[in-house]
Image (tube, rainbow, N blue to C red; front, side, top):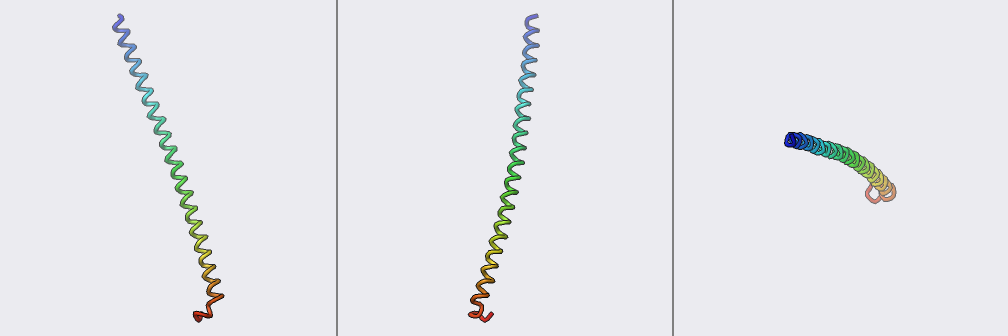
Length: 78
């Protein structure tokens, strides 16, 4: 009888241990998916900032070019 009880307790312990490992795997999977989502949002924000900064620099360069043409265009015959 004692051996049967030991076998049952071992099976229950093994089952609970496997469930614990599965819970850890689910938790790790959720953390990984959240971190990938945050990384995607961060990269999207960086890309938008890069586009905005590039547009700003293009506008400034065009304005400086127009100013130089208006001030010194007579030197180049424009």
